[in-house]
Length: 22
Image (cartoon, rainbow, N blue to C red; front, side, top):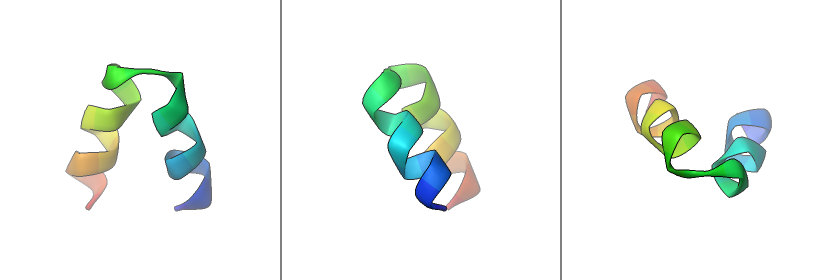
């Protein structure tokens, strides 16, 4: 989960992925 959280800083695309994983 920490890796995904770090990717959130990369841009809106990883943000969508993070929400899907939630």
